[in-house]
Length: 231
Image (cartoon, rainbow, N blue to C red; front, side):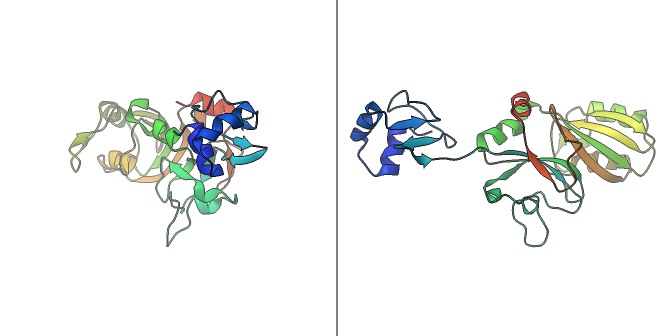
């Protein structure tokens, strides 16, 4: 992250040796307050003003979106509508996706322009639980619950999945909780029982639950409380 003097020197086209005078004259603000000094570290979302004019004014964006079926979890796609295409905001192309959903899966998708935040959520060490409602073709039983808890072996990668939660809701519907997100993981786990997955809906990521009032295709900003509750 850059120092304040380097940022102002590049933005204003003046020598770094002149920045200290600007600060002494009270002409510079960082996030609405006097800076602590020329060496103050700023990030790309810091608001910096000199003589009342912004030299940097970038807003951190954190959104939840209710992904409908048949939409790609991508920012650009030549053939299909993407989750970013669903947004109407002029800054939508600044965003990237935190945790994808398959083309025909529905539910909670997070978008942001804060790469540090999205990396933190995606780190394996965060063990962030993602929860899904899943419908399958054949009846569910305790053998599914036990196998998910033990972990299932994926021959192609040569790995065993981490323990997963499986709560049976009815003969053909269950809640699944994962702390990892391997390629088509839920379909492949049920596939080991020759049980076809008919639908997948993600309704929670960590403490964050999909807003019940949010219709498919719609989005809203995360609240400060929701952000604080995530890692």
